[in-house]
Amino acid sequence: MGMTSLSTMMTYHTILAWICPLLISCHYYSKKFTAWTLAGSVVFMTMAIFAGLYVGLWDSNMMAEMDGVKERIITASILIRTFKFYYLPRVFTLIAFAPICFTLMDRTRELLNKQKKDNEEKERISAELNVATEIQTSMLPSIFPDFTNRVEFEIYATMKPAKEVGGDFYDFFSIDDDHLAVVIADVS
Image (cartoon, rainbow, N blue to C red; front, side, top):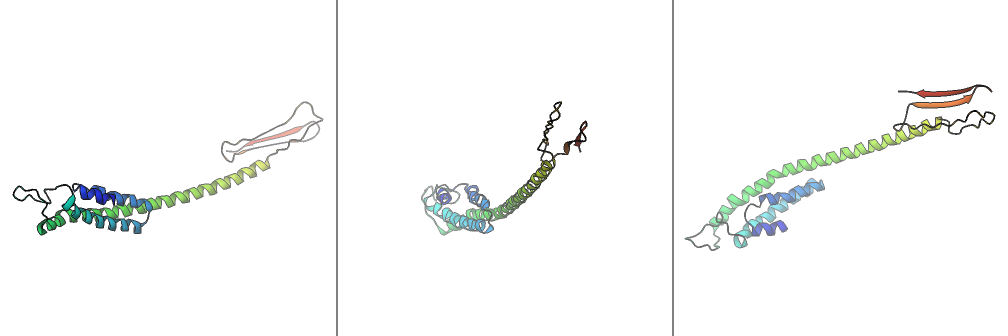
C-alpha cells in the first residue's frame, strides 16, 4: 500500500521500488507467497500508474501539453500510451525478476537445510566424542592407592587431551615390595 501511494504521487522511475516487495517476500521461502506478492504488486502498480495520471506529478511523457496548456485532460490516447509505454514494460520487468526471486528463495532454503543437517551431524559427532572421552577417562586410574608403607614417594596423575579424545595412557602398580611399575603411552 505504501508503494502504491508513493508510485501514485511520484510517477517517475518507481519500477525499482516495486521490486523491493518481491525481494522481501523471498525471505519467507514460499513460492506461493512470492507469487501472491508478484500478483499484488502488479495489481497495485496498475492502480498507481493510472491513478498517477490524475493526481500524481505531471509527466509530460505520459500527458502531452495541448497548445501550451498544462491541464490534466486524460484521453483514450493518453491511456493507451501509458498502458503501452509505462505499464507493460514495468509489468514485464516485475515478471522477469520473479524467476530470480524464486531461484534465490530455493537456493536460500537449500542452504538453510544443508546448514541444519551439518549442525545435526556436528551434534552427533560431538555426542560420540563425549562418549569416547568418558570411555577413555574411565579406563585411566582415578583413585590412587595409598602407598603407606612407602614414604619415599606419592603418586598422582592426570591426563588432559588437546582435543576431545587423546592418544595418551598411564597406569602404575606395585610389582613387589621393592618395585613399582609406571606405564606411560603416547599414541599418534
